[in-house]
Length: 362
Image (tube, rainbow, N blue to C red; front, side, top):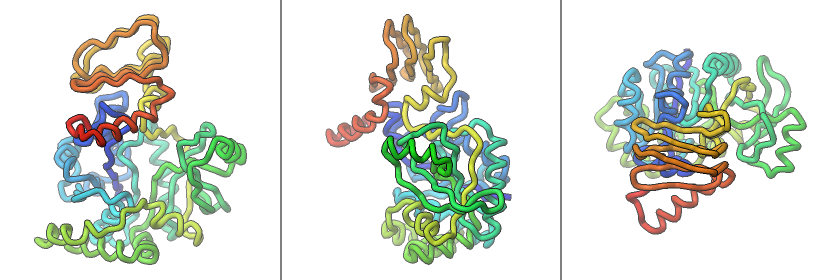
């Protein structure tokens, strides 16, 4: 069985004003169902893991909501970060806690804010990664590109290994020309940020690459069930390096030939902005309008309007006449209107609000 870790952090600023610091996107029902992104992710990994083998790493501000949404996950498996230290600290802490319970367990890490609608295909892909992880490789799962997207990092495949490949290199997000070249070459996958490994193998690599981080998380894990845990967290957590798991461990390990990859033959979406939501969710009518309906939402009335993404989250009616390709997000205290092709720029609005000290709106 797989020990499944779900990092649940970040505030989803490109999905403002629906996503806020106190209620970020992974807690919201953005899946086309009543399930939140977090609940959908945990439901997916349950095909591979018992409830007591599912772990969520989240911030103190969200721990209560996470526990409320996931009553089947044991409270001790919700690992609460006192402050955000990026993915290396979060995932390494989970690996160390699991290693204390089962020293050679196979662990997978899957972000809480990704949308995968074919759970069975996902599970079969993870099982292939688990097979190679048992041989001592640190595994990642890549997605077959559907086009030359510049919004994702890429994985360059090396020689075939069992049901997967040696990973030759992680590649940063490319420009358009490079993205076309990668997709045309046929030996590149999108980097989906999904990882599978034996915890002992990972922790050995962590000790090699980031010894201070390794020693700190092992110390915290050993004290997990003791009365010293809170004091140790206060002492050690603020000292941890703020770095992603890719930079801290996976990229140097890949350069040393210790990383493998399996292709994921399933639709995968990093639900990062409203335009992506418009592409993923089912249209509400024949002209491509997508209406996102969070709990307690209002209504949308769209006349002679096409391909809009509308979120009537204030409880009132949102009406539009003769407009196309817009994002309209109505919440009780903020209204967002922007073209779909500028969805990425919503993040900049949140930065402006921070600079204006409008913390009540972020």
